[in-house]
Amino acid sequence: MSGRLSNAASPAVPREVPKDLLTVAALPHAFVKRLLTLATQLKRAQRNRRRQQLLVDTTLDLYFEKPSTRTRVSFEAGINQLGGQSLFLSSSDIQVSRGESIADTARVLSRYLDALVIRTYDQSTVEQWAREASIPIINGLTDLSHPCQALSDLLTIQERKGRLRGLKLAYVGDGNNVANSLIEACAKLGVSISLACPRGYEPDQRIVDLCRHDAEVTGSHIDIHDDPVVAVTGADALYTDVWISMGREREHARRIKTLAPYQLNERLLKHAKPDAMVLHCLPAHRGEEITAGVIDGPQSAVWEQAENRLHMQKAILVELVTRARQHRLTKRKRP
Ligand code: CP
Ligand code: NVA
Image: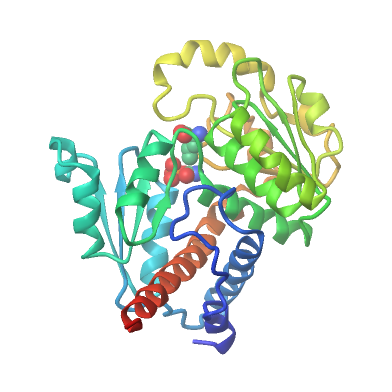
């Protein structure tokens, strides 16, 4: 393993970094920058076939109450590439489904594992896991947020554009979990974000209010419109996500109708900068939130975006697990 890689996981991790990754907003700015740097190094190391075994003897568990392709596979592949191993549990696999408390389960799992990725419904559920577990808890998506996605997306934008500060990202469609985390990540890193959502489908107002402070510090803006053309005008990157998120299936007909004017299509793309990149967290529904011509077109960065989940999440694992180990060692050494 190269010295540069191990330096990135050195003891200089800022003290105020939380044990868990539950939201982007809760992470110090310096830590987010550090994740971007380490993810870039890990990606380069993998491309150059350099060893990346920074987490030997590490066991990661994924406990998912909703389906997943990217999050599950990229975390499992990532921990394996780092020299550790993973196991996957769905909601029907563990006794929580039969009434065992999260508190008892988290205490037990903390004695077997080094970190746990949770995909669930309520944000309060991942927060409870984080309070009860002594190991790092990573939010693998809730109804409110998707921090690993947003961090990876900022990596993709940085790669394509060579910088983050001063750029404009436009998000059109449902102001959902992905939109909320993008607002947090953009405000933290100095990217202005302009959202166009129909009335009733705006992002979470508490998150917008909370992020105004970060945006002020980084000199960026958060704007919410109902006109997609206004939002995308002059944008460096365009983003959309599904109209029917997991758990919203019963609202299908209403959502398709209300969100139809917010489709990311060739007409809308013309209002962005000519070199604007197109992002979608996937899975995509061509003909609904995005047209085939746009997602499969020359401005699309979605496959690189999907790949970057792997590199960013490896960086997250290295940082959080290394820090948790150091913390345990320090505690043990105390008289
Ligand atoms: N983008 C994303 O999180 O995809 P999955 O639902 O497949 O994990
Ligand atoms: N907003 C989507 C994201 C899927 C990765 C959902 O929650 O289903």
